[in-house]
Length: 124
Image 1 (spheres, rainbow, N blue to C red):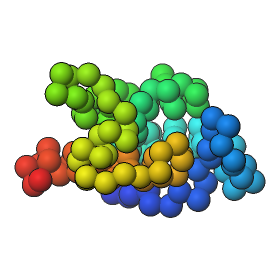
Image 2 (image 1 turned 180 degrees about the horizontal axis):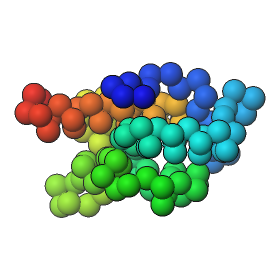
Image 3 (image 1 turned 180 degrees about the vertical axis):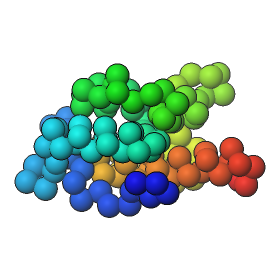
């Protein structure tokens, strides 16, 4: 919905061999429907290497590029190369976070987004 911010990661599913509670998570069909609806309502989709997530959901062709903010393109090394999420976070906030946890990854991605968005407005 317009002017909303996601702050609840209750339904985040983990991957990559980590322990997950799929009874809490959304089905891929529900997630696909939700993303499609949000995009139709004008939402901006924010993520770190978000193209992988959009492809996995099967919505990569549904989301217009102007509604995607892939932070890997905003946070780069001094040489202009992509960096890891933990590297960007550590560089900006001077602290670590638990890597390889989908919920924490989502939270720190949004922290980086808010930092980048405020910097774009000239307020950082």
